[in-house]
Image (tube, rainbow, N blue to C red; front, side, top):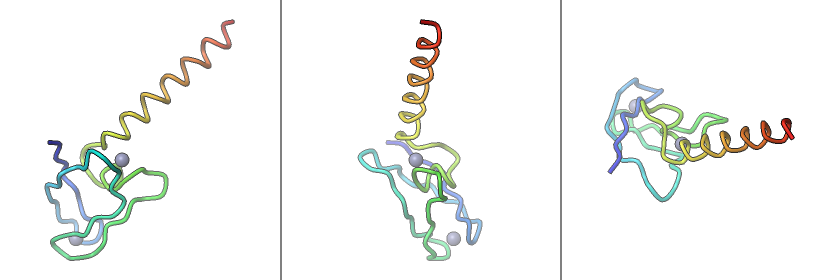
Length: 78
Ligand SMILES: [Zn+2]
Ligand SMILES: [Zn+2]
């Protein structure tokens, strides 16, 4: 089980939230101020936007980007 410390952009309150493993969470309702926390444009989920750790999907995306860069390097060498 992966937990992330999510910081609310509205009230600044922090909360331990369990990260979903099967999907990217785009919205989260703050339990302190009851406002909706939305994902920032360009980020994959609320955790990548406001939490102290990136989500599991983000790590996978970065891995793909690395592989893609490797391919480009290999292509320029060939
Ligand atoms: Zn809040
Ligand atoms: Zn994410």
